[in-house]
Image 1 (cartoon, rainbow, N blue to C red):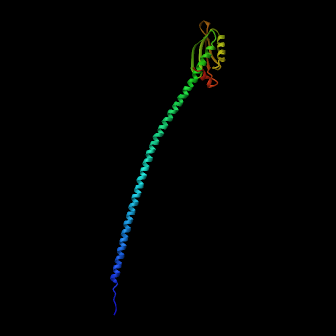
Image 2 (cartoon, one colour):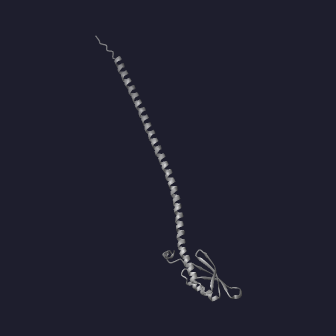
Length: 190
């Protein structure tokens, strides 16, 4: 007798289990892939948002830095103005003592019989006009101005006889000399 074993249903069953396992594994892998893809997209979206926040922070700090730089520029210009004013005040303070020296030298060098009618100052130059009784007094006045410590050598520009010939009008110019050291000028200033 021959035994007939029919293996086809068993093979079909095994093939069906393998197919189901394959499709189940394929479905699980697809779900795992989709889940991984979703997780990666969420991760990148989170990273993108974090980068956007960092960029916004950098922009905000840049704006604050720009405003601080503008304020610094304004303070720098104020500082420059203040330095210029300090320099002007210093020059005025030194000039005050120099002016006192000049007037003192003008008074001490004044010869009897000579009087000044006008005095003009432009920068460091003085223009003097005056009257004298004779030419000798004009010459003595020039020597007196030349001997003054705060004045340089005077330059006579004109001498004219007044009406009647008894008086002489003269015009001269002389330059101021700055003191030898700045401490002398500040020591004598009131």
